[in-house]
Image (cartoon, rainbow, N blue to C red; front, side, top):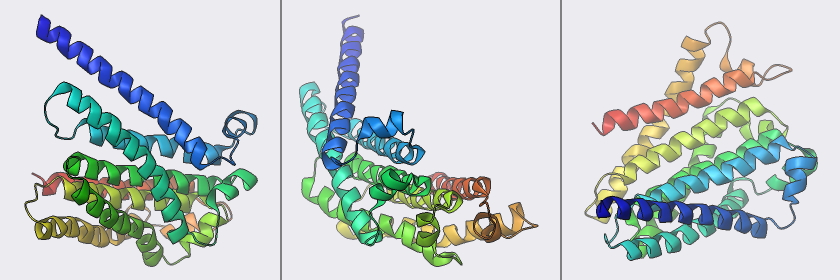
Length: 286
């Protein structure tokens, strides 16, 4: 009975801790985006683009919390609480800082939040949300495996984020249209399909971190294998969707070359990427 009671109040304390960290994540978002009137965007303007980015931020942070809470620790309760607080706060900062850095690297000529706020661009809101979500998955992977090794965690995080940013660039490379241009101009179908490619890459990176590594070489090799698979399956999946599941029309025609882009086709493509990544991870780790 005493052990059951101890389990209940330990679990309850961690739940409260997670809720507090979410509140801190909300405040931190405000600090990093002080020019945005969040309440106005959410309720007065009903800005769907902002909602997409804002939701992506919290889902990304949820992934980080999962990595922190499920990481291996010392086994001592109060040490676990301390590590959860410290790494939860670090995760919040990383999510916000890396978002700023990746925006500058991948979209140097466009201020994404400005486009969402001033023009209500839903496509860019989806793009921001996918950045946060995929980044959260990657940070979660590092937290889950290297939480007690700060130096290794920092090295792997930089490496993983660099590779993760290639998800957008690679999708832009394999498509016969300019992904940036389509998203900037408000094409939600392309934004959704791009989101799927980014999340698929993040899932593969996450998988690479779940294998027990004994050396740096082994670590980079295993992560590299998962990324290489991403470079192979993303275009393969797009080809299959194009030829098998949408046989009477080209996928590009559906999401780009018509007056009203087919968002449903974009969702189908996105989920195909994510599903393909998950299938590979499940089969690879049998």
